[in-house]
Length: 147
Image (cartoon, rainbow, N blue to C red):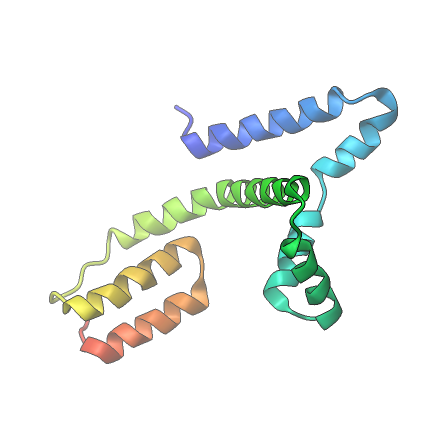
């Protein structure tokens, strides 16, 4: 039986192929380029890195627009980007979750420490390594417990 994330990834791949195949003959190359576009990744990289002040100013103006069509376009592109990205990450997230099921603390940590551990666990599952390390250290400092 195929799991849901694999099924959804396969459906999206089929939709991409259909999108290109259904394009007019003179637009197939453009459609294929659109499917493979790195535009949204570039946009997000610019937002996350703040590398160039000019680029950040342009992005601020883009997101501040009141044009409903442009805002809808941006929301759809970001939604598509995050959906595709998350679907690709899910198999590794499942594997990390399965590994976690083998770890049990020797003693029950305090509620405050549990809060840090919960966030550290989520960071680990999502592959956010630096956040996981920082939260794990905070939990250890908060309630020095041993595994």
